[in-house]
Image (tube, rainbow, N blue to C red; front, top):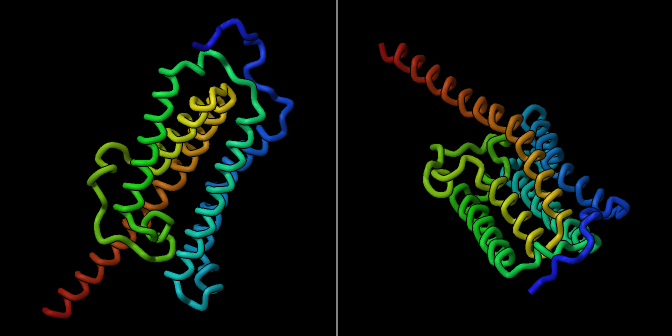
Length: 212
């Protein structure tokens, strides 16, 4: 059983550069994909780069985002290894909670990707690859942002598994970064689909007039 006599005056070691590198990586990823995706939407920079093949361009962005995610996770784990542990977080009950959070996080992320597909998950809307209907089944009937919430659960679970208070701090940073990203992404994505509906309505109206 873990002892609680260890000093707790230094829960987070701010002298470790790896902590700030991890925090920067966490912030960089959504900033990167939002900037690139909006440039694609307005200027078709990736589609032009891939010879007008928007789907190939979307897959290339998906691969890049996935790779950056792996790097982010590596830097996060490395940062945790450099940080002090806290005895209370080394209890068996905390480990069970950690495994549960990681499992829930992975289920949310994987099921979201399954429901949306690669292009639906990785910003295909910005490439003009729109879904026919809004996905309302699992996991979207539980949370409107399963990718982000699932990722946050996994970050927290990993922090608890390692017994590192710094991981909890970084998880809070993940949550803040994702909430900011959603403030930009949700309205923009909603407008993309609203524009499609306006264009469909206009086309239907035009077709009705021709039929008359």
